[in-house]
Amino acid sequence: MYKKQNRDKQKDIRVVSLEDLVPRDHLLRKIDRAINFDFIYEEVKDLYSATEWGKPGIDPVSLFKIVLIQHLYGIRSMRQTIKEIEVNMAYRWFIGYDLFEKIPHFSTFSKNYTRRFQGTQIFERIFEKILEEAINSGYVDASAVFIDGTHVKASANKKKNRKVEIEATAKAYQEQLDEEIRKDREAHGKRPLKKDDDSDDNEDGNIGGTGERKTITESTTDPESGLFHKGEHEKQFAYVANTACDRHNFVLGFVLGAGNIHDSQMFSGIYQKVIERFPQVEAVAIDAGYKTPGIMKEILDNGKIPCTPYKRPMTKDGFFKKNEYVYDEYYDCIICPNNQPLKYSTTNKEGYKEYKSDPAICSKCAMREKCTQSKNCQKVVTRHVWAEYMEKAEDYRHTPQYKKIYAERKQTIERVFACAKEQHGMRYTHLRGLARVTSQLTLLFASMNLKKLATWKDRNGLLCLLEKLLIIVKGYFRIPKVPFLSTV
Image (cartoon, rainbow, N blue to C red):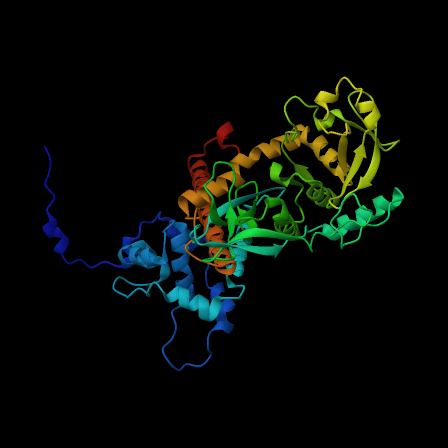
């Protein structure tokens, strides 16, 4: 048995308002209650003409709300977003348009970006304002931050490329490392390394790295992207976003770079941005890709605690692991598994001190097959000038408190990336150029924070209402205190 639906009723004329057509518990209603977007008018007032001649521009608040709708619901393009707004009553209500008002053309935001917003801080200010509202509401817990990187597929054909030679990127702490190398070589009676020579064994080797050249594959479609290839991933041009979040999954900031830049090279940018705004950070949870002496030193020197995973030694099967060679600080030498000393030789341009064995002893050693395959029967073991920071990080790694914080990564930063890619369209971008993709991700992360902020505010509002009702009911009926109501 069923009832056939009569479609003639669709032609009935009714007196309704757009306000009545939007459900009371709709996400956009929660967002509208959570934050006042009028701050955008103040941010863009210098970008519009003060005179009243010509056709007035589209309301900037409505303009940015259109883009937020795109990111909130993961709509793949602005063209499709406009189509959705035309038929969705809640979307119309949110951007301030009535039932029959013409929605702006899909190219409107792109033109406004080119003519007004490009090169401004408006996108960052929207992100910061939403994050500030979350902070003021007490929702952000930055006692521990979680940092990781993820790739965003670029709008570039991988077959359209060319080989170019570029200057190698210097590490953020290169000058500090160079000074440390100079002091270490001086303490060992070695002459300083010069910047002109590339030889490590020569007394006049190169310590810089900024003068080095390397060949990369560059996209002719989007030259600012980078060729990314990791493990079983297909080669593709991409961007990499190193992102930080708190324990409640609020995005605290990010930095964007070409997809061929390693996460460790971008760490300092996002780390400094986060601790500048949140000095209360106590612990920094990062994965093995960031576990380098320079990064460990940067974190520990700031009084923060690095929460890192175990990193497997990069040693061939059947050979002694590096941790089986013990450093003797008093004699400044390395003791091999056969209790023979490896003496200091030099400090190379990468900041590693080289310790070399005596070939005469190694040639007769019964353990040589598990130690080295070198033709001259000499074992070389390296130790970074900042190795003590790596050792401190290892000590913290075994502490239950920080081991637990590292385990939270899968519920925090990894969940942020999963949500951004599956629900908000972060998996790829249709835009080209570092500036435009940065603007896109800024609003994308802003929309994620906005969604969480609105949901939490609405939930807390309901809890407060229930508490007030319980207080009224208890007073009216003179209900005695019972354990489950004693907290109200």
